[in-house]
Length: 275
Image (cartoon, rainbow, N blue to C red; front, top):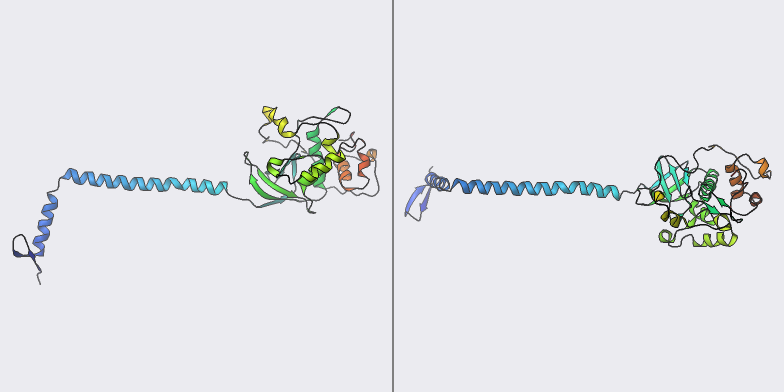
């Protein structure tokens, strides 16, 4: 059955097919240039829309990487220096403290120079060796993309607190907000470690040594070789001639009631013929 539609212009009834043909003729009458321009504009709009949305993808991906939190890292630590260790290939900076740099020298009680940076690393190595593994909880990333964390030995001892309390590192107020101020006051009063003589704060020392502003990224600068398996005991009591290594001497100093006898000048370094 054919369908008709009333055409107001002609005043006549027309078949729908005729109306469609007339619409097609009107479309054919539109300039081809206008059709081309319209199509080109739509194509440009679509292209711009796709590019804008696709360009955001890398930004989102990068943001997710930067904010990524690795959580807990645990394992046997290699000491880089007095405030940095490495576990499973990941460099870890202790949160809130600063220790002397590996090449830094300090003054002993007698005014003689001694390698306080290396001694800080040795003290840390002995402390960690006494109770493995070391667990580090993520806090943030520093500007060198190092993991900054709060670390503890297997027995729960806070590594940063121990280092400050024994004068082997300093509370870093700009980052710790005074978290280790009490331990530092105790170390200063007891004149242990750095406090037995004179020293420059690590951050001031770095400021004066431009080549030390960025941390080393190659071999560990602190303790490279170690005896992984050690079994020390506070009994029987020992003297320096009976001790075979600096790591062993540091363990006695940190864990035995008589350990202080190994550090005659109270500079935090036991058996200086070994250390």
